[in-house]
Length: 340
Image (cartoon, rainbow, N blue to C red; front, top):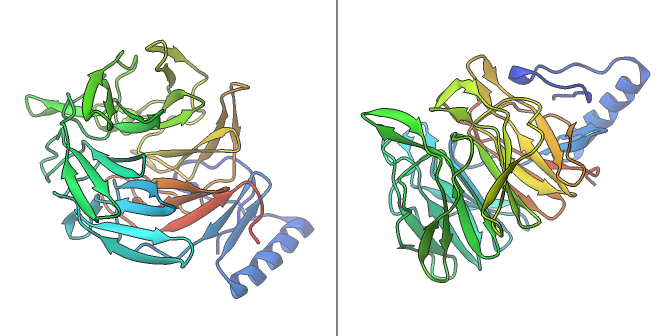
């Protein structure tokens, strides 16, 4: 059992055991909780709860919420690149499998618009070949359909949906067999099955995360040319109405291989990696106040993870516990309020 306080965590997620009477009380309450259900990790800056593990250990996967269920898609597994799609039903707390991707992909993306799931871009082989594929999944028929290709083949980009359109930002492609960042900002309209290229992101990067908040797109963190020793803390905001980017206060901890979700009017950024190790950091940005806050760190530090929000809780799934390859079946849930 991991128990931590609200102090900021560094690389590798080393935790500090609470001291004194308060620490003893917290320890005893959590110990009791572990006997009667899932392990609960309590903290004044949020609360964590361990959940049933994913069926397949993965990293560099894609995650999306569709019809109240979490879809876990593709990525690296112990047996290679995966086309596997696994679905978590929060009502039954069980995992099932659905129709596999048309092809195995890693470092891809998953976004939901109007009851359909869209998997866009990524890398298609052990040689990390960038693709421009757009696949649409219909949960009613359990079938995938190939749609109009993205203008720019790339992987390790980030996506977000605003007003029924999907924005695909950044990522990496290859020039003369070497990775280089893409500054592309392409938008896909599923209703028309059409793509359009918009104002490029000011700081080209890959392994970043994107969250949509009140009609704007927030692009956070990332790295330069797929090098996790060159992590970034950039926070750049795109307004589709003006087709312009602005700069916002940077992410407190430069990191990449991250994921983010909006909860309680804030954007939470989880995990990441560098050459020194993986991150357990959980930092929240308030777009209205333009301020950052350090939140309760993840119980399990990892990168290449995915996330989805269900109601007032954020599920953070899989990811590599060490820099580079490897994966996990970790499934942890974060909330601002205590779990019952």
